[in-house]
Picture 1 (cartoon, rainbow, N blue to C red):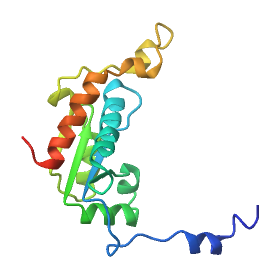
Picture 2 (picture 1 turned 30 degrees about the vertical axis):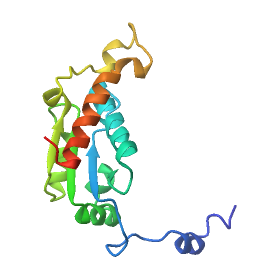
Picture 3 (picture 1 turned 90 degrees about the horizontal axis):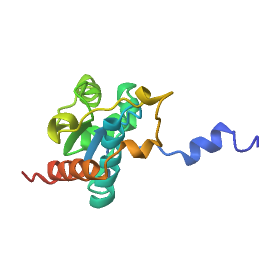
Length: 157
């Protein structure tokens, strides 16, 4: 156990990313808010877009790492051709974090605006008719959002 915690051994195996290392062509910063159907849909649609296009074409960035100035997250965002934000609701948290970090956004997607989702705060059903989390998510809305993300990455109208 002590060997596993040895900082020197960890440092040898944990290589730091730098701008000379290949990275994803594009980066998506998505809301992963599990407190509402819109945040969950933004997260799932972003993951589905990455699955469809592949990690060389696009990846999902770490909003927490961006806001706390983690060097590898900042670096990967700098070298991305496009930065796309996907927010579930009009609060646009992803967009605000990316802008606050100083990056230009190629496309800002807001699901309630762009695909007409209706936001449902999941806490409203606590003590009433609380369902399993995936029953709050529409497969059709995930598909619509995924297609919008993919079109944004591929520059399709």
